Image (cartoon, rainbow, N blue to C red; front, side):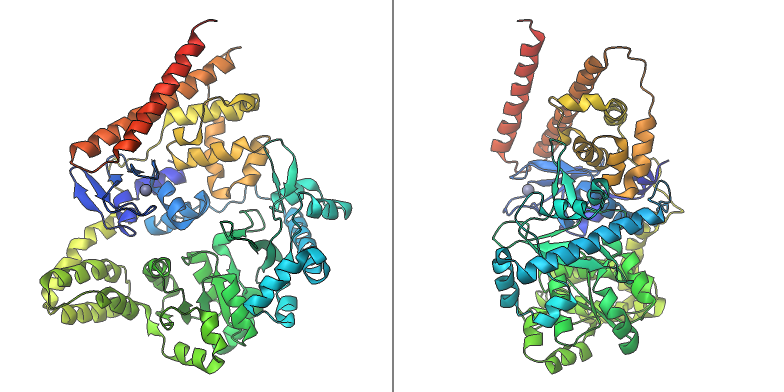
Length: 578
Ligand SMILES: [Zn+2]
């Protein structure tokens, strides 16, 4: 079994989505108001038997557990895979093959360093960078900060950096792999970052591994990072670690913030033990890096919903750290830099009064509840028990169980019983007890179609009606999308997360029954099979959900059937000779 299949087998989509959304039973399935668009009724469905989800409302999209995490967390496939691997207790193989050789990686660092220097110079001296300088001044960055963090500006041009670096002897292919350039549909390469404030991201050794960037207008997304590359692994990156490591060791604690702007301001105010995770959740790799410097971690995440969700998931990091994590309570509605602006003493007070993560969650959970009411009592227990079940340290676990018992005024035995009822789910996730006959969602039709494409790159010239949505497995969809922008399998591998290489190899090696000269006909057949499968599955989901009295957006369903009809018509036109 491949690693991806193993992870799927040990993952329950209901459990994962249940951490983000309160799911209600709807017959065999579950539903909730969609977490991706705002709505009052529930058009978001989870199908346990298919291990998939779908929003029948405004999103009109769905997929497997990976697709959910990718969308919800704004992450790429590889990162979603790592998150789920962590949870499932699956150790991902270390990707030594066909990783780049040391010298090659060195090339990417050199290119990144040259780019950082180039963009920093533009920021400092170019008239074109006026807007960038104004933005940075508005945020309150001093000249020293700009120099320390090598803040830059990328020209709003397609080939400015490319021309500059190639003239200095860098190879186009290296720049592409490092993510400084990207390849357009026409096969030409262009500067990836244009008209943006540039923030070099460095590893603990001070090498530039990638970049963060911020737009200067109102366009979305505001922040774009370098893509995953041999030099840049987002899930292992801690922004600011190059400047913070010594101070973290000295003070024996680290502050983890949400974004690079927070870290830059913290350092400017003399809080030099601050780093940022590159996303809302903290990965095991990041905790392991910090663990070498200190066992005391203090979180300073924004007090919004995303920040709170991230904290929920941080409980697992406590087990990796083998220590308690603390949380800074920011005054209502304030960002860290607003507090710093009021004086470093204020900040230090907040740090001194940081609460243990679990206590913080008790407070957050119960703040909106009236614990005199029976319903609110069970709501509190329902929310907190799974968190407490995740604590490995038995003494700390007992402490918090007692706290919960006292809070909801229920005796310890009842709480223990409820905890034990939760246990089977936790045990099921252990690698030693895989779910029997679990659904891996492996789809040979999708893989066959991908195999044809990978083995016959010329088919890419005319993808016809094949669209990413027809690949219902996220790993296949990810490959399809990346491949569409690449020349061949080699550059495909360079452009995707190494976690997916194993799957590419498996698919690329899949044997295709001899097809002689009619590859194209075979491919059209294949496309139609996927198309039919997609619509059939969608119809089945609609039927299932509708039968259960769910409110389904009728307009969406009409739209879907309209599209379906259109495709049928197009096909029959094609079949009729002119
Ligand atoms: Zn939706």
